[in-house]
Length: 137
Image (cartoon, rainbow, N blue to C red; front, side, top):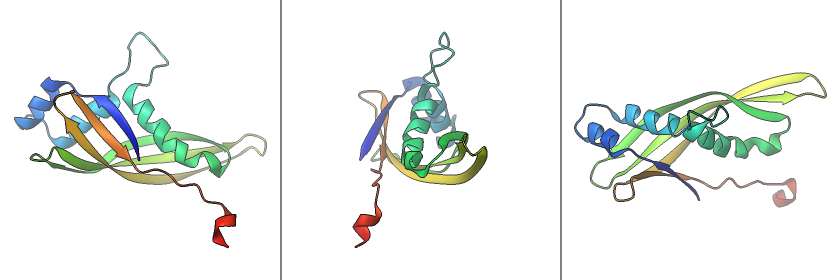
């Protein structure tokens, strides 16, 4: 299982606990934050998440890129500080030699823990198991 730790601003988390923002707003703020405004190439947390998701498609040919990214189906248990969220994303494949393009919609449900002491959200991505036809026999 691949874990990804993203910083959690405690003011934001407290706003969630006080019901000033909902879970989707909290997760969107964390997942789209973290970039350095002085670095035009820093995609922040969203770039890290997308890289993790795209790594599952590297063996499908072409040059995969994420054209859309969103969150849905958020759940959270306040007592255990555990939850899950679905990352919805569109992967576009570019085959430059054949001048062809195609794209597919994907989603991945990921569990997460909120670690208040270390001020992070830890997303737990399931390991992607690449299979070959040799394993079918």
